Length: 293
Image (cartoon, rainbow, N blue to C red; front, side, top):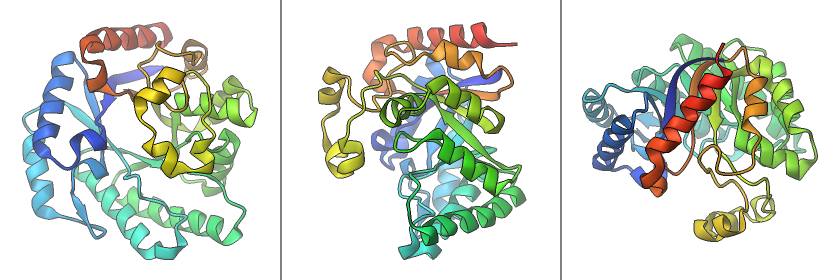
């Protein structure tokens, strides 16, 4: 790997549109020693009705000037190009999010693939919309990085990227999601990393125990509302643990990513692990050192 920096995610539920909380978070991230932060669009209230709000954007950029950090951008959780009910609004939101990434100086925009459906109209809508968004993102110097999540197979994500066939539409490889999905859908985790390898432009690194929670597929609202400590006690689901705190074979996976160039982005609940954050960053540096070329 050729890693240009180690990053940490800002969590939208922690920030919740409060720029004071964002400032406090960035201060702490910088103090610990992170060089990159992934900012979710739905953390900072910069998009209203599918449009970038100039006043809010300027306030955010003014805040960011106080930090020696670089940024990547994560799509809002509500963004879904399969949503044919409000297809126009979803595309407006996607464009606004790309503009946000451009304003932030980020060439990475992470978008969740979701789950392939059996509805041809829905899947065609996703495909054609992504082609439109790819053109728009290219005009603004932004790389769309489609992220695998734990509700579908890696093969489906790769097939979609092959069909899109655009240079600026690659993958965010989420290793924690891939491990969980491999346990649920019965595919080989390391083989899935090999399959994804040609498309990887960004990586998310976290840990879990590979214990799939079926409510994630059957009743997402119930899953979302399950108290995190309950899932932690049982080791269930997408726990977003610090690397090395679970059972994902990260070293074996990173061995396969020798050609990766980009940010080593950690996705864990930073403030939950406040006593350990410097140690967690040092462990991340060890991963990077072991797998750098």
